[in-house]
Length: 76
Image (cartoon, rainbow, N blue to C red; front, side):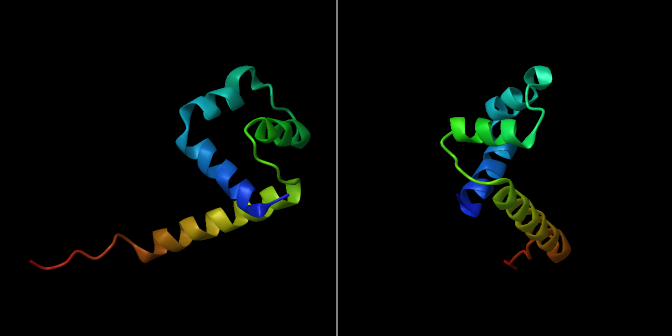
């Protein structure tokens, strides 16, 4: 089980419309166990705790990027 794989899952859900559609189609994911099984079908193995930690890290990084503002532009 791996927090890194949970982070990969979060990134895949954000970036892949097919994965998002599969998650929302018919609201077939109704429990954490079903979500973990769905992730396993994508080849990603992690626990609910790994997912919670990954989610926390993901949002912390988003917050830090937001607080930093847009990247500085060079002169010239």
